[in-house]
Image (cartoon, rainbow, N blue to C red; front, side, top):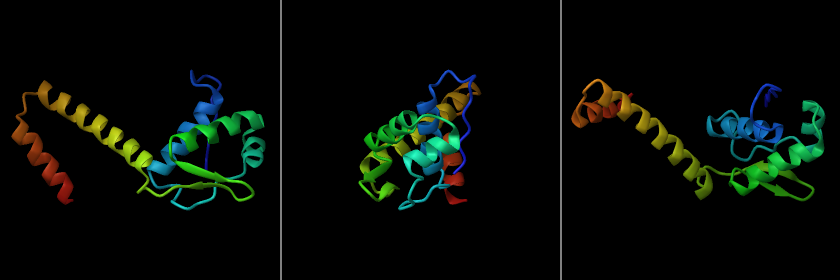
Length: 123
């Protein structure tokens, strides 16, 4: 797992950690059932406080990406998880909204956009 902390980011460090782990889960770099590094280990590797990594992991747990079990660590949850599905749906909706706006800007019809979607789906 690779996490890069930026001092120039507007996001607090815990949010940078959370968002990068979330992105790696969503794009499949971190797999279902995979155990994340311990909070202390992650803090040491990143050179941040344990409080920072604790907050990131806690947020990920509340959002349904991971489950933390005492003595066993934090594990990535199944994509069948409703919270994780909701995150995927939000991402899909955002992508479709962007595509539809672009299509409207160049005067495409709904049918033309649907044809592109079907073509992409079949690939």
